[in-house]
Image: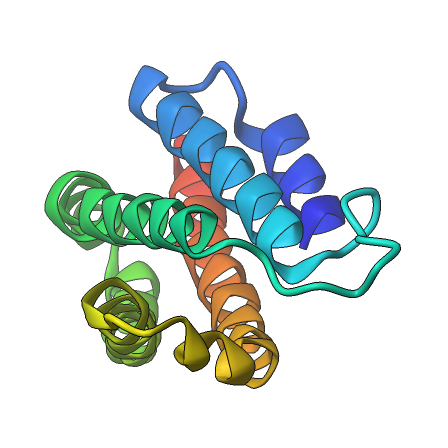
Length: 155
């Protein structure tokens, strides 16, 4: 996912301040995901679970990222794609329902871990992070398709 982000940053960084901010937030989210999941370079040598507070902080970032997409970025991208012709409109009609599915999964994850009052929920974290990671990767690919359509039409 970080490689995918680096490609996105190389393509679109500097094209729009909102997109730059959004990609920065994506980077921050991915770093925290790697920390909570114990992925390199944040792997734990003792194979312990992350502390509950760091999981909750990750959930806050996740909800912020998802919200920013839906309430700030997507509207602008979809409007721009609507102005760019039928192929861009078709893309948004295909992509947005799939993005919404990833939103549901992200919000379910966040609800589970922010509303839990027992650390035992962390025993399910590896499985849930794996599912969330797959959804995030799909989401980022879909978001990048929207950005690419917009970039292709404005270039």
